[in-house]
Amino acid sequence: MPQLLTDRQAQVLQFITGYLADHGFPPTQREIMRRFKMKSTRGVARHLEALEKKGHLSRSHRGARALELRGATRGIPVVGKVAAGEPILATENIEGRIDLNRSLARWKDAFLLKVKGDSMIQAGILEGDYLLVKPQPGAEEGEIVVALLNGEATVKRFEKKGERILLHSANPAYRPIEVTPQSGDFRIIGKAVAVIRSLESPIG
Image (cartoon, rainbow, N blue to C red):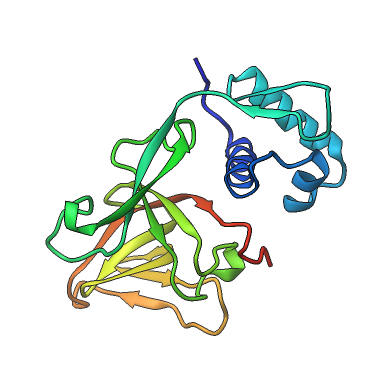
């Protein structure tokens, strides 16, 4: 049975999964090294060995692209809109589903939200990306959350100062959003746990 992954192992597996979906074949170790700005392929090899031991992929020595994903996939709903007073996974909110390895989407009621705008680019979240969201009503300091503020969904980094909440962009062009008890309807919908990207999107 596949074992749980570290954050970096999950990111590497996510990249391999996306690359396979776009190209029909897996990336080379050198391509993985460049994507994650590692200094050598030895670091990549260690991650691949861990993923193999944990039952998420298999490797052979027949070529540079000799990787094969293992384990079941799960169809994760893509939420097209988030509205006040509605369940996130209401049928009318779901635009489709994307199959992800169960190790990446292991949370009950996890969903994908397509990113709009450039407010989180310095966190590596680009327009057109899909955020994998773990539903939860609260957040820890510094976590990236999906929040609903006055009927509008936003993706920001969470900070709490006394009774105030600051929602920070990862782009200096945008000011923090301050939320107080007087700010109106506000709730945290969930925490962003992974980014799913088409390789047509720039990595930055």
